[in-house]
Image 1 (cartoon, one colour):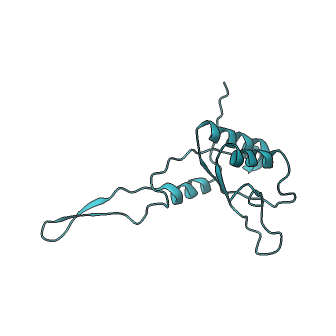
Image 2: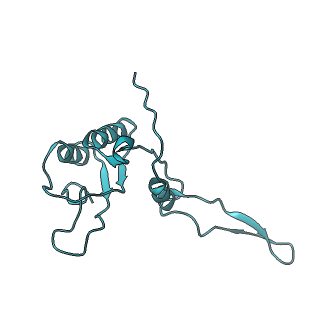
Image 3: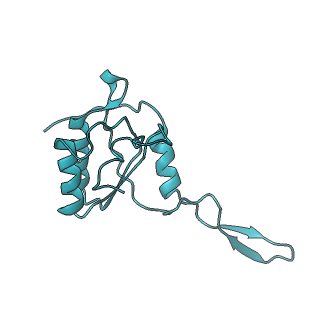
Length: 141
């Protein structure tokens, strides 16, 4: 067995998970006259209560930059736990989209494992060829 001890290098993933799945139960508020009204908080995420599997793909020795090995291990772990949707909120410049081992595993996750993979587009645009990786892959949304 492998023991993996990781630390969070930032709060971006937690922030994105909150946007996606935060859930605040309806509160009961007492109205004038003794009536109780149930209200829902407007702070719910877009998929309130969705289950989150947090996986770290960054390497602390590289300033938390992701590695191909980390990405592949993350996708395989997501498959192991039955995830059907994956969100990757990181990016870097893209030189050769749809090439290499990471691209192959993303395609396998989509085509063979039935996962929908969402990625960021990066922060380099707008301009021609400014779409970053992994957003430049054809197997991701």
